[in-house]
Image: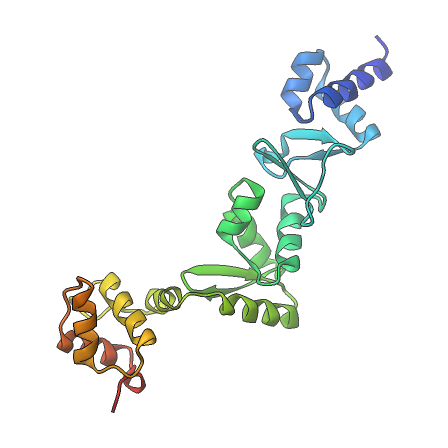
Length: 229
């Protein structure tokens, strides 16, 4: 069989099966990895962003989203190129940046290591927003705009949780983080309430907290300005 015929079989197989692994192509068609790669390179193809790039599809097959992604079953393909290039493109295009979870949901794979490399190479920046790290553009003006957009959608309890998480001593001694978070959220909702009033509101919600504990939290986080005079 001529090499050209083998290449045609590779392309023909992928026209019948939109996505296949290199191993499946070799096994089903009884051809070498070199033959598969040569046929794909000649025709044009995409490698998957996930599964270590082990799955392929013909260049004409994907119907990419506005963000340049196409997911077939559990395999993700990108018009931007490699996984690293795709992460940068997604972050740059997003009005509010991307969290790790958002990136992983879109790309169907873990990207912890990749975002770390991109940060080290200064191709991304990051901020803390609520309980999450948000990855932003490396362009300062673009990053500032993304940060403003992200902050508009942060829930008060997430912002409070982030402040607690970044503190060297997260909570006043003897108090649970959950209790402190609920108290601080209540303070945001009723900024002029006294410690006694705050305690009563939270007690009505089933939280065991006393006015003295409220005062301790206020002092611990230097939140005196949030209480009524």
